[in-house]
Image (cartoon, rainbow, N blue to C red; front, side, top):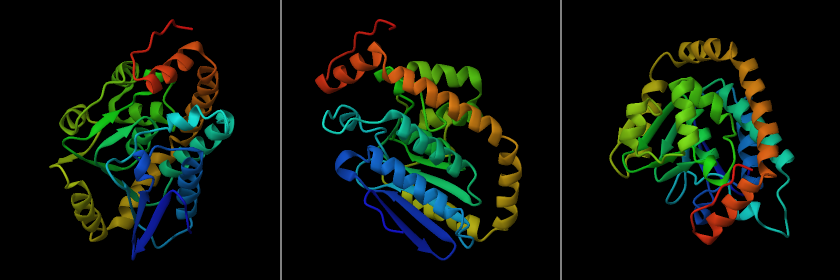
Length: 260
């Protein structure tokens, strides 16, 4: 497959998916969300691939949703269409019949962080900036952010992270159980390749079978959460707090939220 916002490389039983909008810190516009979805769904039929490595080109893994695209009056974002793609993306990632590894450097925020948390193994550099920061623009997590956070840290801690929007470095994220390994700056991709090679020299077919056993029982819950995220996000996009949040972001000032 060929993409405008991604690259996909296959090397034997390993595939590498690279988010490729470096000029925007891999912020996800509608085209990128759609292409990630299509890439992950395509991988479901690639029976020879057993490990997928996901990384970002340039200075960051992904800064999250493209806020400038959200505000473009000439090409307004259709939130309902976007949420269909985001929900497909999350389900395709969670049900992939292969081991998934996220290699994180720089920012992994918002939807980018949801994508990271949906991977089986997360390796991040110590100075990474990881945040479920939808709250900063008056939105709720999407891309199954609620589901993946709950799986990683449980409901009480998930609520705290969602409500605070706190930015965490690699060591802080590891201490909370959000990621699996921290590396020195500039070493995440190298370490991810080492981990991928270890999987490929292990009885990985059995590992994938165990993943599918554990994940299959949760797919219905995932689908329910994705439906709730979609309806909530659509409502929040129309809220006064969201409009204030994105305006404050563009103007580089602190937002003044009213709970409306």
